[in-house]
Image (cartoon, rainbow, N blue to C red; front, side, top):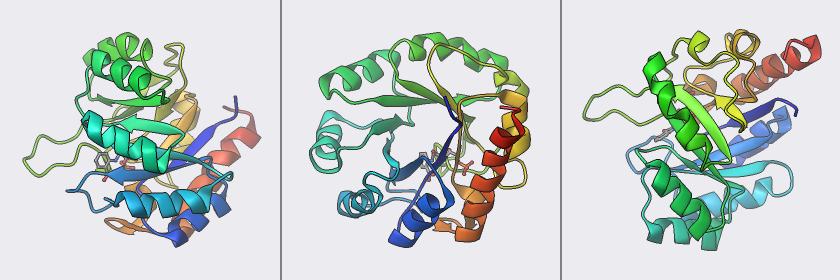
Length: 220
Ligand SMILES: O=C(O)c1ccccc1NCC(=O)[C@H](O)[C@H](O)COP(=O)(O)O
């Protein structure tokens, strides 16, 4: 399986063109009102139309209720729903079966103990994403915080489902992260921005290039 590269939190057609032009496999749209990357369903549909057939579209939601998942499925029809909240394994399974959608569950990692939940989520998800644990501040976002964690905790993690690495990745550290963890893909948001919510095409290009170089090196 080739290395998967996902650029998350896209808001404009320019962002989509930059991500796909750089060679990303997946683009992510964020549905979280407090995020500087939040988009409406209508905007997400337009961005998805631009990506159609050229990159997978991932809809990121945080503890969505059934009505919201139904709206995402009826309008956007993403390739994958990324669940980035406190969804239990039962809720993940419920969404996956009820809406016949592929699911990627995000797991916040701060210590080895956090990995105890991996098997339960792997059993009910199509993919997993390991991300830095969000800060416990009242205004803190569940993701997209530009924080890294100790990659050695997830090095070689193989729960029987593809696993993507995220959290504080940027063009300057993504190759090292891939070499160390050898996971199935990488996901980035703030590391390819010039300011919160504003993607930088040059950084996107540099990020994808650095990630792809590890494939060419044969280290991945
Ligand atoms: O990006 C957001 O604003 C966001 C908001 C709410 C939940 C999750 C969010 N992002 C999750 C992602 O998929 C990010 O790519 C991942 O957390 C890594 O972010 P970063 O450290 O900024 O690269």
